[in-house]
Amino acid sequence: MKPGTQGAGVAGQVVAFPARGAEQVGFERAELQRILDLYGRMVAAGEWRDYAMDFDKHCATFAAFRRTAERPQARVEKRPALRSKQGMWTLFGEHGQVLKRGHDLANVLAPMERRLMKAVD
Image 1: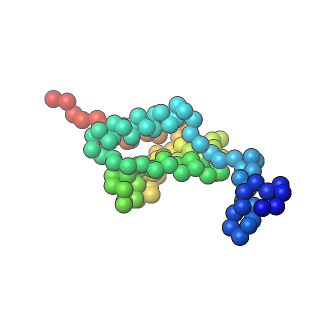
Image 2: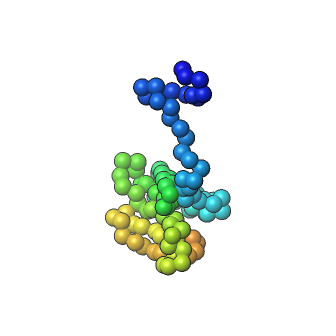
Image 3: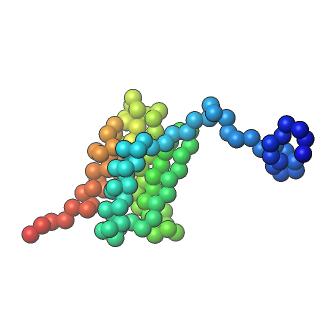
């Protein structure tokens, strides 16, 4: 190994970590807590069984699945670039249709919350 190189990658090339300037969008603790609370209640109701999260420099995504091999039953996206326009939160349905958009996460999750409510006799 040459002096000054930390680790060798493929064919002796040095593989560097991503630069600090390459920011990615993520969920804040309170936002993730609210999303995972809904996920836990949907699991308890037998609606969802798995989830996935994806983070890149434009958006953070939380997807909930009925079964792992299917497309997500619901997907919540946070896009800060849309904060001043229609709102940074978007709820997508199973077929990719936009169910709700807004500035407040609680209002965007409301259609999924309503699924949990059952009529009481």
